[in-house]
Length: 196
Figure 1 (cartoon, helix red, strand yellow):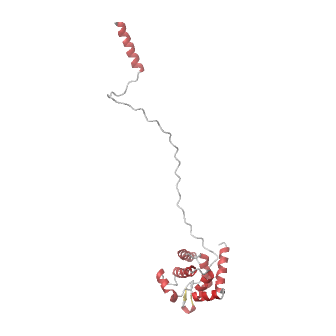
Figure 2: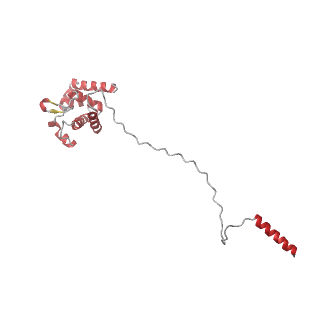
Figure 3: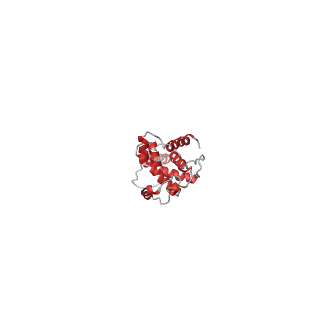
């Protein structure tokens, strides 16, 4: 019996030495094996996005209008769909870039707008002072855009701007192009070819 008892002790000592014992003695605790670890994809570093800086349109140094006046004209052109160089050419032809009153007081501003023909347009556009550069540009460009919108061509629109639709129709019937229209178109071509 001592022999069986001795073997028992040897087995118990070996079991203690080589079998791990749990740290806690919680009954009926079921341990689950850990979930397999998924490989982690490397994260691309976040690159800050710089906000787009809107650059102002370069100021033309080849015309005698200051930067602020050019920006006002550009705004009126953007609002009416008129090319900036076309508006500059009309201004050059009408007043040589001067904000003046002409025709005995009938024509006002850079684009020589006559209030008697454009009262409704001025009211619609909220313009009360044609000597104000932006108001003058807005009314003049709006009228030019309306004439171009008639689909009769740029020469016809320039004739209408200069002398009214009846004058433009008469020039078209006679198949003539006025010196006014030729000068505006020639100057516009010069502006488009020059680097500023």
